[in-house]
Image (cartoon, rainbow, N blue to C red; front, side, top):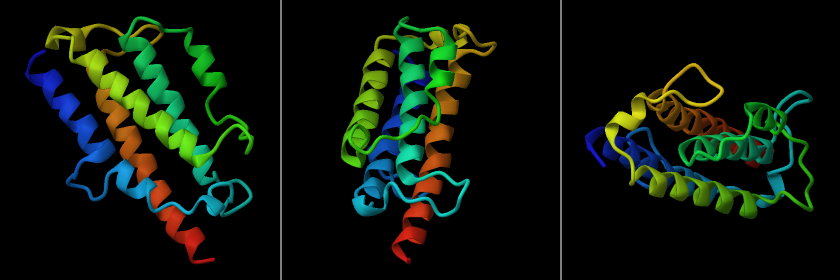
Length: 157
């Protein structure tokens, strides 16, 4: 493992359960979610909290599959993006735990890599692992902001 990989690992950990510069981590915000609100949508075409969570899971799984050379054709992840949520299958607790587990697995997989890995091209894409991993961090922060805002909006109803 080398400096850039270590930096990416540090950022992944900060976003998930550290004390990031931008505010609260995924773990901290997820603990504030009222499970009775996770299936509610603020509007007809808006996403629910649970849809946002499982969207984050999908692309974290894509990233893990790429890092561990278990990449399924990208169409698998595209089909599983914004899935129909079934309240008997998809719970906030289960999804939160799954997202955390996937990120831990990503970190473990990266601990065995060197910085030159970041220059390798991602299967089914035209970008490298540096772009993918930094993109995952940005993606998590982006949707975390949506989740935090939607959580406050729904709590005020």
